[in-house]
Image (cartoon, rainbow, N blue to C red):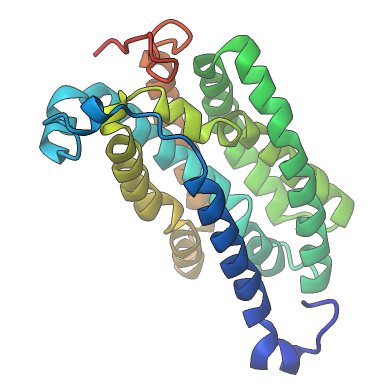
Length: 259
């Protein structure tokens, strides 16, 4: 939209176009979803545990805490290097907004293409190892990458650094849905994944930009880098205690997660 519209056109009506595209995509997704087979049996859906938040917390506390930890660190890291990164490169690195938009568009296209590759890798090495790699690398690299991006001037350097950050994120984002689903039986899977994801994503992923800009406004912008690293490190602890879902997983219908 920035490339084909003037600033006035973009502000007046052009900004609505991506939302229209998103609305159409949502309808397509709904149609596709209605054609999918339901994994839960009728017996499981009528279980007294199904749909019970109290039952979820009482019977699956370990899985709930693991999903919370994964989403806290994973969503914060993801939103930092995608949604917030455009503002960061403009406000902190002082790069031209149009250049940043182009760089981030290309980065996100490459990042999208990486997802099947990292997903296939998790089929080989297991979800647990994927999560250990993401959380360990993310905790170590988040602060150095943000500090480097804060002073970058070359669009090629910015592209390389952001792509590196998102390559690390791909260990998580390529399996985010399935690794969480494998931790819960069918009768509580939607609640177990949906509730914990929504809470952690809203509190940490959704507030990433606000926290970063607030810290910048009070002269402590560097603290945000350590905040991201710390949240991902919590995910590392969860990765180490999570079961190996190749042996103890619920999705294939034969396994059981140790509590």
